[in-house]
Image 1 (cartoon, rainbow, N blue to C red):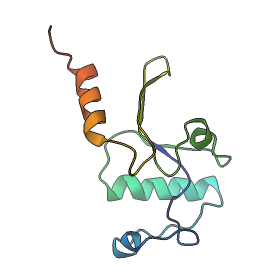
Image 2: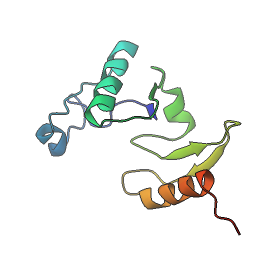
Image 3: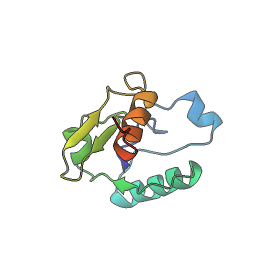
Length: 109
């Protein structure tokens, strides 16, 4: 996972669900802000995957058209092996899960 700029910051486009879930994150002003936000995300969601943080110039976000969210899988050479539409409405988690299952546990044909 690469954590990019906050989609629903308290000083930006705050959404009711973030208020209800007490996810109150201001726009990042520094890398430290991003590191603190991703730490809260990892802990709050009980993530076990590695979490990286985008640069303050939003290089990953711009490279992968990742805002507000996007699902990609990169192969071992760093090439895009799976790409979905922009989230939250343009991607299909079931499709991603099927792709991951196929590459990690391929069926014998």
